[in-house]
Length: 260
Ligand SMILES: Nc1ncnc2c1ncn2[C@@H]1O[C@H](COP(=O)(O)OP(=O)(O)OP(=O)(O)O)[C@@H](O)[C@H]1O
Ligand SMILES: [Mg+2]
Image (spheres, rainbow, N blue to C red):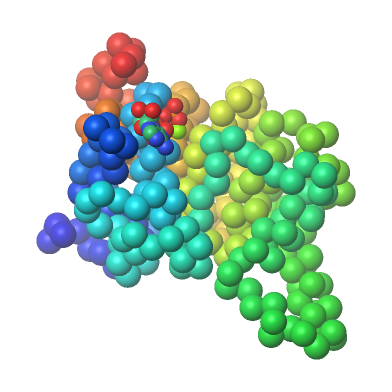
């Protein structure tokens, strides 16, 4: 640990986190801090290890080295359901909502899958109905915050790519996440919708006090909305700083302009 950092202000801290696939070191001793309540960006070219990093902190993969601390506790190696229970929730690069369920139902399913919700506690019918009502109200509040409430009864397959991304964020929000890792929330979305999604993220952070770790390629859009940036290249963090610092960073520009 670094004695110059105030860890009470840090929700996620990784210390030399490493993940290998055979001979390939996809995540190579990554040490980073995500400040509580921040929107932190993780950038880097294709295949540099961003998704693997998220998969390793959330417990989808077990790390081969290093440690992960979240919300004051050591979560290194905990499985996905345990990190989710602790409030560390991720979304996927390719959203996969249940296409035959409505938007509302997609949120409710995510809430019911929440291991924190003990439905066995609500076997008495009246108590169960109350829980369902509260969940539905919560789902509507989230849909309103995301601006998708008018689509509540639509099936996701009838909606555009931007709405799918927002549903995915909604599914993470209903789980009472403390930190949400978004894997390319604006991939495949036109610039107008992309700005709309980022504006929602900024508002959510304000209203719900949630921390966001965002993986993104499109710096032209993402840099305007975030507080701090880590740049990754070939499994390593090559630079970190404010969006302004990163935009000026020579090494980052070389990686992006020069490609892999
Ligand atoms: N399950 C896996 N098995 C083997 N190799 C993998 C696996 N997942 C990822 N890799 C490799 O690890 C490296 C990092 O991949 P990763 O998907 O984390 O990159 P990324 O930064 O998310 O890329 P992109 O921007 O394309 O999403 C790549 O070389 C990839 O081929
Ligand atoms: Mg990826």
